[in-house]
Length: 552
Image 1 (cartoon, rainbow, N blue to C red):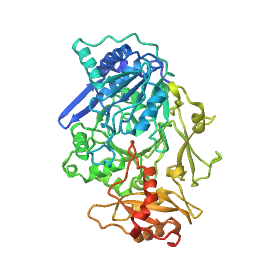
Image 2 (cartoon, rainbow, N blue to C red):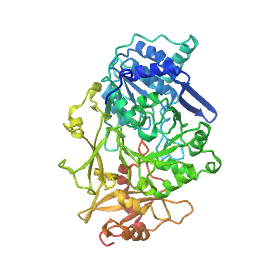
Image 3 (cartoon, rainbow, N blue to C red):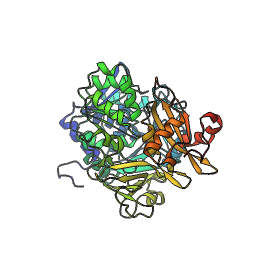
Image 4 (tube, one colour):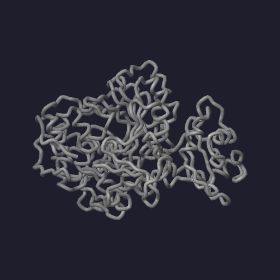
């Protein structure tokens, strides 16, 4: 990917350029409380980054060192990120919703020179927090903790805030002596969600952030005001700095804990042009009594992803938000992926994740790496200039063995997802390879069963997993959230519905009615947790269980 000779070669110079030319354009807006609005411009962001860079430098941060951020999504997080960038340091966000073992693993792996923690504690995280409308029973995170590291320094958030305030009082801070920044210098470690074990850290440099900006497609237009409901530790923020700065996009941060009422109020008040959220969040927004009287006319597009999007949700979003709906699919390792188009019909948005965005190559391969034919199921592979350099080892150097397991010698990243390509070029996902159910020798993909069960009038949400069985190997368990005001769906009604559309062996063997589905730190349904529940649910719900192998 080429840059024009006049274009900055790194994020630091890019921010400097925008701060000089358009210093008063808003860069971030956040709400610490319903009535407490805080914003910062690109000019103020640049000055604050100088002040915090001086603070970090005094703490021993230099080029190539690690700065770990245990902060919620906020202006302060953004300032710390840009402060580390201009020192040539590498930033790692640590989502406070991660468990103690996961956080300890990350800190031990990176041995950060500086760790910034939040005064209020790491229970401030993403949209599925304790106390939020989407919270599960164990959403609140414990104290940010990790092993002691020789030479490491812990800074509290108030020290960062004080450094920024002091700089503003004296007309700006003098930045420390800054190193030369090369486009190939690493800038960020982004951690996988940990749904398949301990987290792995994906490393990105300035060039990759530039490539992300080139492939951002319909979710980024110059001057956008973009809603940001996910943790900043996520790849959806950490690799988007070039995109946001170059297009002068204002990032509008939803309060923590997330609520549908706050999201509606902020989209209206801040004239948000790009709404974003996982399907569960959008369902809560549509059900909220404030939406019918809210002015959503500023929205030009609503984006979603991370899990299955029911067709009725797509239709309702289009109708009630008054804008197109698009679905995006990517992974931490690839950073960019696929997306539906503004003009795609509802069924395409609901049943596919679209086509590759600009700059991304896509193919479906068998286990031996050979391409499969159109319509056949295989592993999803992608390749682009935006994908990670590799997984980090100790000290943020590339760990060659796990990296080689996912990136081949030709640069293709093999994801853990199964999918197929239709004649229309759209990618249809069928689930993680590790989540495929093998029942009596037949392969069953959870997403195809979920899509049919989700059509039941009494079903609000559904997730399908496999459970061990001594006769069939595995049986199909459907975890169902009942639609409010509807009777609980019966197992036979779900089986009949599935058998009308799919092979009879794909009908659920068990049904488990639950008030909500557990989610990972990134807002996806936690299939591992459900699989563990499915192992023991049979003894708890005998009346809802059928005899395996006798239900065809």
